[in-house]
Amino acid sequence: MLIYGHIFQKVKDQKMIMEIEEIIIELERILYSHESVLQIETALLNFVNSLKSRHGNEKMENEKINYENAQKEIENYESELTPFWKGTVGTHKVKFLSDLEKWKYTDKETQQDEDRAKIEIESDGEKHTWAMGIGKTPASAYGQLIALGKKFGTLIGVDAIVHIKNNGKRNDYTIIEQEVKIPEEKVTGLF
Image (cartoon, rainbow, N blue to C red):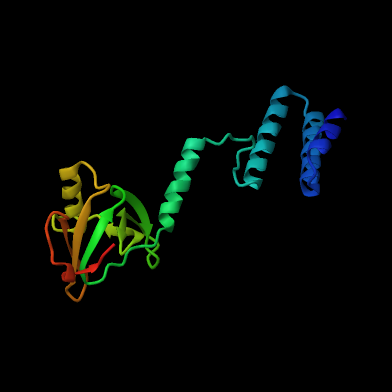
């Protein structure tokens, strides 16, 4: 058969050649063992479905890459690689490098997905991702960042002072836009 020679010239992987041979043998069996077109179509459909399940429902044809979407996926992945900011109790000077974004966080203990927010910042001369819960009150870090973003139309490039205090259970954040002057000796995280 001419098709065999064409396939084997293109495919060099021995395992794949064996799998193709099995497929061709099964197709020949289907074509010669059924008399009506409907029987052949049904057998071919069953065969294609068995191939899909064997290969984990992979697409059988090549799929072109959408470069714009692929670039966005890479950028999103790279932003995930930025170390998370673990602000310590005290006052920190930060610069916002992105706007707030929603993202899915999977809790390691419960394996439950949670809606969270994150923003890229610069603090102490280093880039970080600051992740937080999506607070429901204006006093939450999320609520304060929403108000600040609304005021400027964006958070990108906005300088702020973030004051962190801990009540023994969790951190509380006060975010003040940079115009407010705080004595330099009180700022612990300069960039």
